Image (cartoon, rainbow, N blue to C red):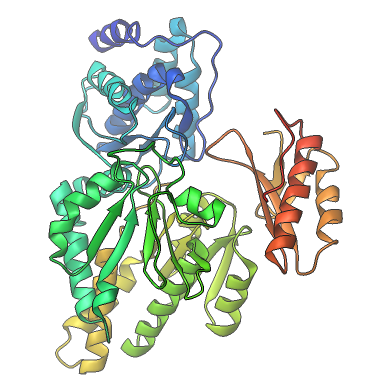
Length: 502
C-alpha cells in the first residue's frame, strides 16, 4: 500500500528512541518536549485512522497545559469535542511504544482490529500552545496526518479546538467552525447575559486577566473587540516577557494561594488566571484588609449551580440539576450545596472524563475540578424546554426573562469536554497500595479536627497528588506535609524528602 510506504519514509524523519515507553493518560502524553517528536508523528497517524473510522473530523492538541515550559504533550479529541475513547487511548500507547522497525506492524494491527476503510477521506484539526517546542511538534503531527493522506485544518487553542471539532461534525449546528465564530458565539451571549443582569455597576465591567504567558493571552487580545466595552480587560503576563506558567497561571495561584507575578491587587478588584493552554480558570480578589480570597473550581461550581437553580425557579422549570465533584472537593462546598441549596451532589473519580460522564446523567450537570477545569452540560431535552419557554408568546415577562437568561448562559458556555505505584478505591478516597499507606494516612488524620486526606497518582505529571483538609489552614498545611512524607517513605519517593509548605 502506497500510504504505508509514505509512513515508512516519513517515520525515519521522526525516529523513536530505543527503549523509551510512555503511557497515554488523562491528559494524553506529557513529558519533556525533547522526547516527543516521534509521539507527535504517530499521533498524527492515529488521528487520521480515527477520522477514517468515524468518518468525522478529529482534533489533536499539542500542549502541556500547566506544566513547565520545557515540557510538552499531545491529546486527541473525538468528533463531538469529547476525549478519545479508552480503547483508542490503548491504541495510542501501543503505537507510541512500538519500536521503529515494528511501527508498520502496530499500525496494521489497529487498522485490522477496527476494520478501517483506508480509502475513506480524513480530516484533522491541529492545535498548539505558545511553547517554543510547539511549532516543530505540531509540524510532526501534520507530517503524520499527511503520510496517511489526511487533511489538516488550522492551528488553534485547546477550548477552540474542542469547539471547532464539534462545530465541524455537527455541520454548523453548534456554531461556526472558525476562531471568529468562537468569539462571536461566546461574546454575543455574554453581552446579552450582562444586559439582563440587575444592578450591574461600572466597576463590575472590569476584569484583570493573568494570561500565564500562554496562548490564552493572545486570544484574549483577539477577543476584546467582540466584547464591545461590555467587559474591559487589563491583561497581565501576556507573553511579551516572562516564562510560560512561571510564577503565574491558574495552577500557581491555586497552589500558592497568592496573586501571580505582575498583578497588583487593589481591594475588591476582580481578577482571574488561565493556565498555559487556557482550559483552566480561577478567580480571586483581596478584601479591605488585604486578605487574599481564591474562587477555585469548587466555589465556581457552587456559584454557577446557585445561579442556575435560581433561574430555573424563576422560570418555573422542573429540571434536575446536579453538581459532580471528586473526593478532593472542599467538604464545606459539598455540605453547602446539599444542605443549604438542596442541590444534588455526585462524587466520582478524579479526571474530567469521569466528571463529564456523571454530569451527562442529569438535565443540567455542573462540574469543576478545584484547579478550575470544568464546564456545565445541558441535556438536549433541557435546552428544548428552555427554548420553548423563551419563544412561547403566552409566557409572562418574569418567566420569559429567566428563560432568556438560561438561553444566553447555554451559549456562553463551551459544553464540550476536554477530557501506578499507588492504587486507589472508593472514588480515589482510599489507597489500596502500597501496603501500609492508607493506615498511615488514617493515623495522621486522627490528629486533627475536621480533617481528611487522600492521595492519588497524577494523570498529567509523574507525581503523586496529596489532598488535605482540616479545621484551620495551619493544620491542613501540616497534615499535607505529614501525609506527603508518608507517601515518600512508603511509595519509594525520588529526590529530596518533601519540605513543609511554610
